[in-house]
Length: 392
Image (cartoon, rainbow, N blue to C red):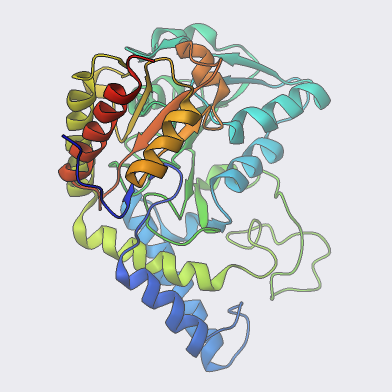
């Protein structure tokens, strides 16, 4: 029997969260109409309003991860944050450890530095079922190991890295900077930078934090301020006679005009998460992830790529029959109004590790506003495609 079509089911939360809380839309609109300026450097009311928004957003983000507000830096997103620490923190001859599931926002700047600055990169051992092999962390450390960069949750397969355990191992080596890519975990997964021994946490504002695109930032420990060069140089609105850079937070890394409209929306997203509770959001997404794994596992001609349940969060990658991923994703959109992603998801290393790098996979990813009905509808749609194309 043909299933009843729905108007829109969005299952691409790993790319950008949608919908946003109503307060995010309202905050951006209200800011644009009543404040409207792009800096907090004047002595008039609107400028002071921007200053309050920045301060309250930093405080909310700090509360989410257990750090001081002054250690939160605003950027355009995770990619800029990771480029800041990679390009600003590595020098000729340094050695770097990464997981086998990294995003191009880590691998591309590292590959650039390997070519132009002579750094070396070692990928830790890992697998789909087991995630990162913890034994390989200690085994791969060298005298010149300068940094360890770990994707907290794989955007391609939903593999959750053992960040806390890696942090404990690295703390025995004080010269190694522990960097965590929190693009998929910030706002959806409990994070405590003290307990996890994280030195720098990069995050996106438009994914789990439910804010607008073009927002994000990073947490940085005090000990790194002298070690990480800024990515950009320019105006800060204060101490304008200083010729190069103000060497303190946030001015060392925040130059030019910030995305004030976006940060106003981000503040509303962070407030929503604090009110709902990260643990509750985590539980909801984890429940949907388990349901999706079970539902899709019943489809005979579907090949799921699933981590072990204890290290799986938010993402379900699969292929249907021998259909190219793009064909499956296109059919889900055109016939059923289901929005999923296809391809390598900017993570070719992860796909090489899993063995899906030839064509990639179809990726469905869930968020706080997805429901059990969304998962059932996806499963029914895939079953209908199986019936339609199974004999061809």
